[in-house]
Amino acid sequence: MLVSAEEMLKKAKEGKYAVGQFNINNLEWTKAVLLTAEELKSPVILGVSEGAGKYMTGFKTVAAMVKAMMEELKITVPVALHLDHGTYEGCYKCIEAGFSSIMFDGSHYPIAENIEKTTELVKVCKEKGMSLEAEVGSIGGEEDGVVGLGECADPNECKAIADLGVTMLAAGIGNIHGKYPANWPGLRFDVLEDVKAKVGDMPLVLHGGTGIPEDMIKKAISLGVAKINVNTECQLSFAEATRKYIEAGKDVQGKGYDPRKLLLPGTEAIKQTVREKMELFGSVGKA
Ligand code: 13P
Image 1 (tube, rainbow, N blue to C red):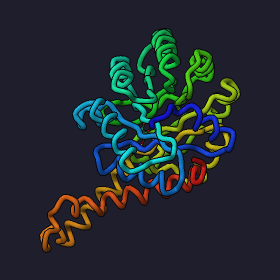
Image 2 (cartoon, rainbow, N blue to C red):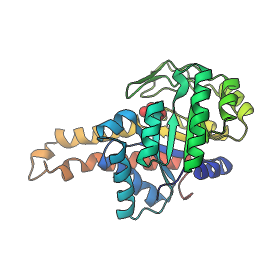
Image 3 (cartoon, protein in one colour):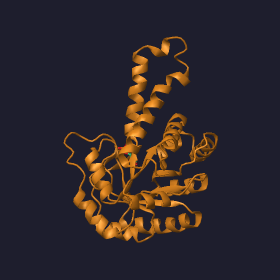
């Protein structure tokens, strides 16, 4: 059964570890993340961007696939199905489709409008027992068409949004979606500390988990980050393993073109990346 992310993040915050959000793109991705979470007895959040939802033919398909897969694979660890960087309309579609968690990315709106729409969604999510993530500041780079300039969050705005009763808060602290440029100056821990001082016990979310050095991840967790999003790194692992398979000519040996064989190395590579992240985030054995 899908669960809201509230309980798992509360426990993570108290236990000083983070739960990974791994974005899914298709059946192989979903299977790889769920099986790894179960094997490592880790709670997990499956992230679905609006673009990925559309690719998988719609949020209803995604919700039905994830629920059925959890049943057939006998998944026992807590799993939240979460809309990533949702628009206002996308949030309602996911609520209707049976997701257990949503992110309303109101960072593109003026703060007053972000507050108004978030207030409304807090009420709906409370009624449905769903968790809600809000964003202040913006995550740099581009993810599935969502482009951010990477402004750091204003701690007072964070407090205003946190006080509305959201479950978790993504605050821009110099993090970027996709690969980090060589001259990236690193996470702004000063901003993170100011945000934490304002929002108290609210679990904080670190987007752009791909490529953040381990020491920065650990420091971020020590400062109140309880959810870390990873997307690009699984895509890179999948692509690299698939390329190796094809470059080695394995797709033309015997029945190597069988999709179940062709997609296997990539799927195994996703599992390995998810495993490494769960170990780094400290969520192994916490289910
Ligand atoms: P990366 O693609 O950089 O890992 O970021 C993922 C993310 O933040 C999803 O919201």
